[in-house]
Amino acid sequence: MIIPLEHILMFSTLLFAIGVYGTLVRRNLIGILISIELILNAVNVNLVAFSRTTALSPDTGQIFTFFVIALAAAAAAVGLAIVLALYRTSRTIFTD
Image (cartoon, rainbow, N blue to C red; front, side, top):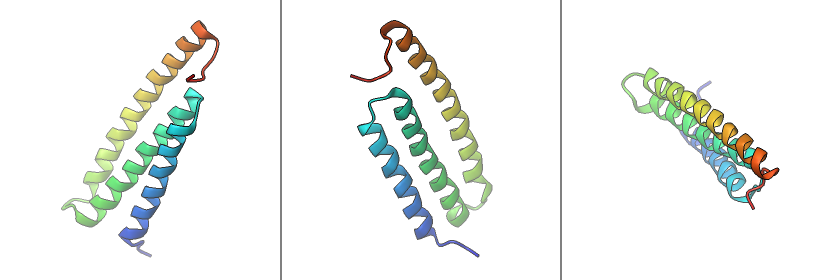
């Protein structure tokens, strides 16, 4: 069964909106990092969906997705290190 592109784009838009909402509303730095990961996952869904429907090679979007996942893992590691350093100095991880 082939899922139409419009359904995939709606799912990706919903993921992106949840990520933006979580980024703007959360006060906890770890929650903000998780919301940013949701935004990056929405981008990954878009890359795979568009490469499946429009690219000459359907593997192109998957290759870019692997790069985005690797970049997100590195950003999460750096972000968690910053959160730990912040917690050691101020004893809180809230963004106030």
